[in-house]
Length: 253
Image (cartoon, rainbow, N blue to C red; front, side, top):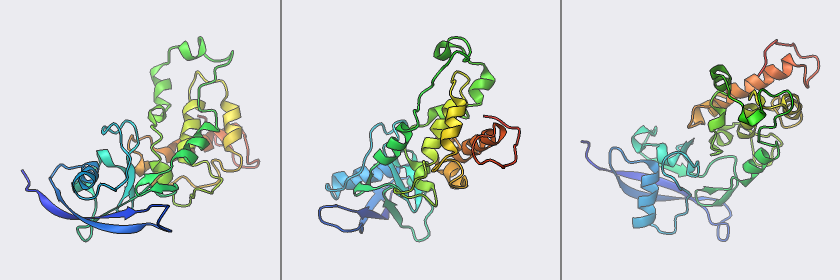
């Protein structure tokens, strides 16, 4: 068993009542071989600095609450081992998720992202053409696989934090919202495919940003948001929705 080590941790601290911008505070913590980033944060809060603010709930990578940046990479703190974080100087720097407003310290405001998701009617909408009785109908295995795990999204915000050209003020819906659109457009029980494609081919949609591999890397559930958005693009081309004059690919969601 590896011996416990003393590690240097740098944490971005920010109190909107007293700070104009984040300040980096330095801490020394004892880290065991299998310790998670969340374990380190809890240790700092309990034994070093009780004023540290961060968010967590389930500790099992299910709720998506504990997202932070670790040495520039968006991660879930509860699923990230300290030993797995790339370091050049042995130091680990923890900051709030990028592309999200900061409430305090490591607590990012996810409401703008959640509002973008809510704006696209993120629920299945069966119609008379949907198989069986809509939501109560069985799905074949290939129909489930077509969802590409998009139904498992926990809205953690990591993919939005990894978007290289996004910002909280951007019109871009962001990969998290676009994955939700894909999840329902690809669902055989949904009857609103064309309306969803019309929504995402407008301003802030699938043509506003090139899908980035960083989105796939950031996703803790391997949904591959960039791939899902590429599928939406292919479906829009195949169905000649938006961007007239683009080459039709013959593909569909």
